[in-house]
Image (cartoon, rainbow, N blue to C red; front, side, top):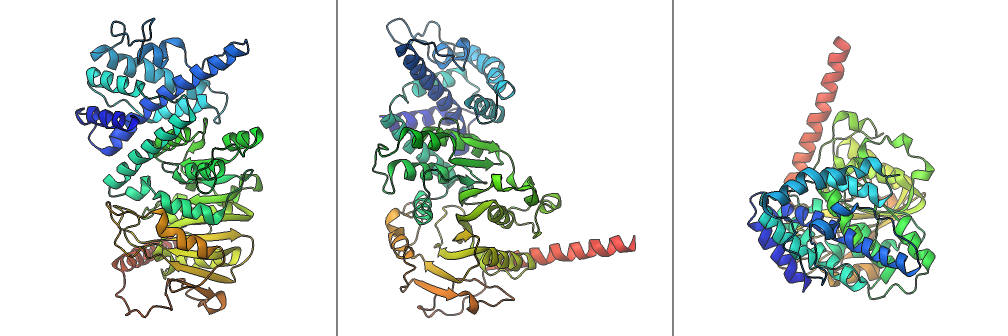
Amino acid sequence: MFEQTFRNIDDVLWKEAGCATELDYTEQTSWMLFLKYLDDLEFERAQQAELVGTSYPFIIDEPYRWSAWAAPKTADGQFDHDTALTGADLIAFVNDELFPYLQGFRDRATGPDTIEYKIGEIFSEIRNKFASGYSLRDALELIDGLSFRSQKEKHELSHLYEAKIRNMGNAGRNGGEYYTPRPLIRAMIQVVKPRIGERIYDAAAGSAGFLCEAHDYLRYGPDGQGDGSHLSTRDLEILQTRTFYAKEKKSLPYVIGIMNMILHGIEAPNVVHTNSLTENLSDIQEKDRFDVILANPPFGGKERKEVQQNFPIKTGETAFLFLQHFIKSLKAGGRAAIIIKNTFLSNSDNASRALRKELLQSCNLHTVLDCPGGTFLGAGVKTVVLFFEKGAPTRRVWYYQLDPGRSLGKTNPLNDNDLKDFVARQAGFEDSENAWTVDVKDIDPDSVDLSVKNPNKAEAAPLRDPEVIINEIETLDRESEEILEGIRGMLL
């Protein structure tokens, strides 16, 4: 039922001139979904308060509640077409009254960890792209047909929303920025094994897929088939308020991430809208550290020099700066699983070698999962997953070369079965045709080359990856530029 509603909403958006891409569809669906969710949540809380003889202090003032402007009802519960705004009146209300009112919550909230603050943040980062009040009216009526009043309904909606995020990720060249394949995330979580009471962090959260999957792992069990009944009231409270932490720089993923976490049952997500890399690494204290870090930081980005000054190993590569941030943000004994470009393992520039050396010395890099091409649809980048623990140096590295036995693509994506052998063998670091162990003493101390080289398969020496060559050229250009700037400085 809900699936057809989502299709119908997309049909309405497709006809709307202001919505041209899957990103627009997801953004516009998100703000309407959020307000409908909020209305259902407040209705539920008001009913609970009434049962115990107290009154519920509504977050949203009456004129701005969903039930007042988006879906007014008659006394018998039917949609009230006589009082419902439409056309130009509806657009004027949404743009000139509703959004400014909701944006104001950021200033009125008691703190950033409240749902009030999240309301203000979301509506400060998003705008209504409907130009036609008649199209908006159609979309609102469809959204009103969705319900968040049972766990089963929320669960179904979360799956549909995930599908929408997947479509959005697949539609763009930078798909990996919005969508990390969920089977890969689930395998990473099964290896890291988070526990109730541990703090879990993602500093480049995107659509919050890692945190949502970690929530489902902790609440419903590793196979996702539980009902949460094994958790105590205190466990559930910890899960809600003191488990998941995230940061996201870009506005659209920030909004989508919050909505995704809400649909997965986290009412006031601890997601901060900020660029994690602007934080100086030396300012991170013990209280700021986490037990578990799960992330797919953006690759291919370039950071300005003032951002690079926050890090001991200077590099313009965004993903390498994030890796330094993650190492520093882990508690002693903390575990991490980080997706990164496979070129990180072999790049010969000074920053890459220094970062690999730092990783091996300060952490136990126990596992490297080599992902096949096509894992990230639309991204065109080969990746590896680094699994490490903070606090003890690396003694040996277990490699696993994932081979699904087929080419991956939009019609044949990575699935959970593809990763079963990896998860099973990783538990005992068991070698096989696709898995092998490298002693750290056998790693060249100068190059610190961690390349994936399967000793069980005879391979012709491949041509160097053009991406590696381009990356090295860019790095050498930057280093030359820095040397020239230093010379100019001395001459002046």
